Length: 111
Image (cartoon, rainbow, N blue to C red; front, side):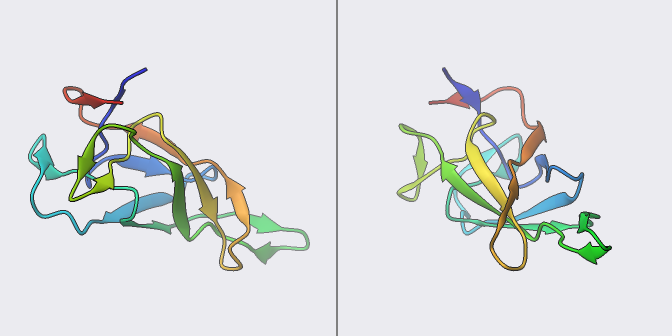
């Protein structure tokens, strides 16, 4: 099923409401005036409040995408879709849960 393409201005949250910033290598393809995000871009998380007992911080730091678009690619890299599968990782690269893509552009879809 087609999903909307994610761009660098999309709102992506970790499971604990930390905000994700996309650092894209794409400088060619835009949707809604912003560059399209690809699977291999850097997705850094800031503001994750997650802690484990007894109060040890274990914040989500980055998103690692596992499944992106099958057909749509930018510079040979699959794009990230609103329904793509990924994991938020802590400093020790342990999975913390899936990211939530909350807001994307509502016009361009891909599979």
